[in-house]
Amino acid sequence: MENNTVKHQKTLRLLMPQWQGGNNQAYFLGAQLLNWLAPDSNDAFEEVPIERSEEGLKIEKGIFARSTLLQQAQSAKSILQKHNPDRVVVFGGDCGVELAPFAYLNDKYDGDVAILWIDAHPDVNTPEHFVNHHAHVLANLLGVGDEEFVAEVPKLVNPKNVLYVGLNSWTESENEVMNRFDLSAVRPEEILNNSNPVLDWLQKTKASKVIVHFDLDVLDLREFRSLLIANPDTYSSMVDQVPAGSKMETIIRVLQDVAKAHDIVGLGITEHFPWDSIALANMLTRLPLIGDINKTEKPTYNWIF
Image (cartoon, rainbow, N blue to C red):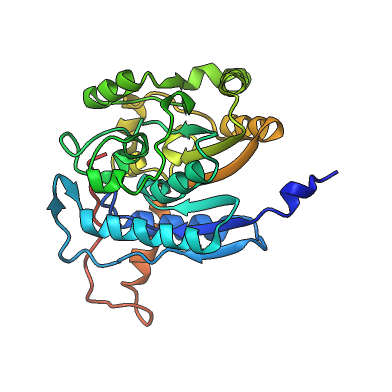
């Protein structure tokens, strides 16, 4: 029988095709496709306005497109405040889209939330070490990094309530932040057979709500190729270099198991990099009758992870 309390809670679907945080336009299309592919819903829906132009973007205070990213985060916050939802689903571009909705939910539930950060990377970098903001967002939620981004977090996340799931790669500077906060992690091999490491951790936190960040790059590029690192031109070499990620069915099982035992109030899905769709879209712009037959430009990408 459906829980009447859950039934009458409001869910907001937020489409935020932000790309500047990873400095790759492909994330704009990736977010749009996520939204299009998702099951239909009667939930409230809003799209956060995202600047498409690359003109004028520069590094400010160590962050690429800093002012644009701040403005977009504030736009998302305004939408959340307008709707005041109980639950939020985010179809995002780069990982920075999680700043406003996760800050909102953590504040709404007075910090009584556990965050599952399902990601190959820890996202706790800072402007001193990395220019792309998509790798800063969890640090901001914890109170670290650029002061104006941190100011967008009314109640800082309790580091004891954060669990990495599928973590595979991190930098020395990120390792320092992870150690500083003693952040917990479950590696891909630990959830191969069952979800117990995640469920046991959630049981110990005793948080009443769960928020999930799902960066698609946690998935194994040998199974799922719509990832930045799965560039068709370098794919064969990356297969040899990149450690095995999580299988799609593994992540589905973990999230289903969590949802059966806990109250998930937030789900953000990010960093969909649809290589084939990007190539196809470029091709269509260069064909007779529908495009420009004099166009020679091919898509370009930023390879700073």
